[in-house]
Image (cartoon, rainbow, N blue to C red; front, side, top):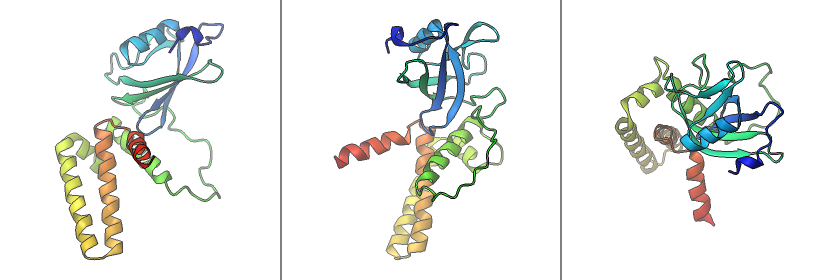
Amino acid sequence: MNISEVSFDERGLVPAVVQDARSKAVLTLAYMNKEALEKTLELKETVFYSRSRQELWHKGETSGNTQKVVSLHFDCDQDALLIQVIPSGPACHTGSYSCFYKSITDQTTDLKPDRFAILDELLHVLAERKAALPEDSYTSKLFQEGVDRIAKKIGEEAGEVIIAAKNNDAEEMSMESADLLFHLLLLLTERDVPFDRVLDVLQERHQ
């Protein structure tokens, strides 16, 4: 990125939308001045400018909830930034995964649902669980037990899919395949591998 191309406002600031590179959830909206942007590029972790304190703010410096920068783009007018990150904890000071956790609109719709939207929703939930680790959550427990336990579950579920296929049981195979896909997505989240990377590989192989 050429910082000289970024259009800062009259206060010397530019808005920065921070997005989870894995789930694509928007985590927060913050602001950067030139120095904060330079520090972000240098550290490869988000550094913002606090308008209330009028000073630089390295996200997670005290809480440990840092945000590792994966990519950084500016928009067509060059007056807004989009930063994709791998967060190491909640983005919000309230302890929530994202600052955008309150809804003011009815989420129901008459449109035909996207059959693949459940994947985006599931990736969002998995990223949220990893960041917050809520109690009494099966997913949180697996994250805490680590990669070996999750990998073992994938092996178990893959075996169940094979058995269902051998039994020619479509219902059982559908259910076991769902379990397998869930645990695979969980493992990708645990290892901070965006699902988009998997899709990119499939696309490249298809071409």
